[in-house]
Amino acid sequence: MARLETERGIMTPADRLLLLFMVAAALVMLVLPLGGKGRGGSVVVEGAGGFRETMSLMEDAELVVPGPKGETIVVVEAGWVRIDSSPCRYHICMGMGRICASGRSIVCVPNQVVVTVEGGGRATIDAVTR
Amino acid sequence: MNASRTRTVWQIAAVVLIVLLMVIFVVRKGNEPKRLTEHKLLMGTIVKITAFDPDEEILRGAIDKAFVAIAHLDSVATRSGPNSAVTRINSRSPSEEQVYIDLDVSTIISRSQAISRMTGGAFDVTVAPLVDLWTFDEGADLPSDVEIREALSRVGYEQIGLHPTSGALTLATDVHIDLNGIAKGRAVDRAYRMLRTAGVDAAVIDAGGDLRMLGLPPESESWRIGLKHPRQDGLLGVLSLRDGSVATSGDYQRFMVKDGVRYHHILDPSTGFPAVGIMSVTIVTKRCEDADALATAVFVMGARRGMRFVERTDGVEAVIVTGSEEIEEILISSGLEGRFERSE
Image 1 (cartoon, rainbow over the protein chains, first blue to last red):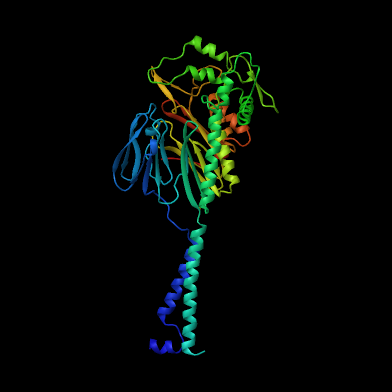
Image 2: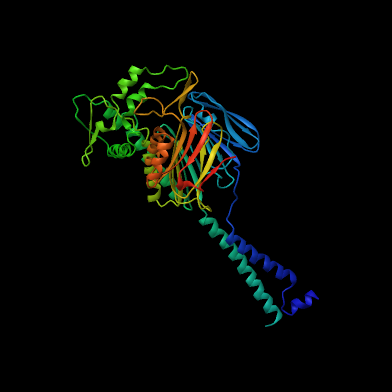
């Protein structure tokens, strides 16, 4: 029967379904933004003298970062990253706590360490005043 | 129309639709704002610029220019360094009645003077002799009363005169200046202008927590700005802002504890001692140099007087956190009602 309808110049049900799907896809692409939002996927750790390491937020890890004051220890745990210990005087970087949102950073000025969460779309927080 | 011709028409329509889908995808992908973030160690802190624009070349060029502007201000407004106008001022000989300085620095001093007058001297760039007395190393001795009295005799913004056109600076003998309470904000403002002039769609400039926003972030109607909790890891809350600048002064930034008392770096120019009763002040205003200086001034004024000042000053809003070891109260100015969300 289906073949008979096709020969009469009428689209098959499959043709109609395909057309409907393509129109819907076009509308969705017009309306919805590209890319996702939410948590970051990786952590970039930058230090003195061009030190740069990238770690996944999905795997627990510890990184020792050398700096002019000594060693800063960066810890990734359960999807969050924090500075666990630092040779700086006031430990402001440790006081900044743990972060996970894309775009957020922890910085240690004296030991020149910058920890930034990247990937995963726009951050839930754009910046922090402190 | 016969059957085969009808099928051909439908096949062409399907191909056209697929091509159309691909074109839509490519055009949208091309117009999607790219995000670029760069950091540099400047102004004694990490300066972070995050900017959004579909054109990556514009982004890179604009961010580079913004960092050059900040680096220039860093070199002229720091208290040390060969090109520093502040060093030039503070090392002048007693016989020098006038000092001619960099235009950027004279502009900062001019604005500082205006803010000093607005705040009754709660913000004062001549606080340098007091700043030099206090070190916040754990176990350090406190300055003596004699030392503080001597330093206070050299503090007072009225002792600076700035010629409005020539930029010539006249200072009383022994008066030194410290622009750390305002120069970082000024540098953020300069970077903002560079990004705006370059045509960048949206950006946030962050100089150690002094922030200025340009435009709006993609797919959003506001910037979400976290406020650091003054005593714990993490955030006290989040401000939703459409534009402007934000700066915070807190007693947790540089401090020491001696005999159970916290001594921090925000000094009251009238007493010579750290201001008391407040943990942090966050100021929201248009220009970052104003936010930077007013955060210090309101901290020094104290919670009640500070909030009265904020409420009667156009274009200035504040979040004031009072207390010593535990938060006692969070005061929010009327213009921020509904825009501050306390963290759990």
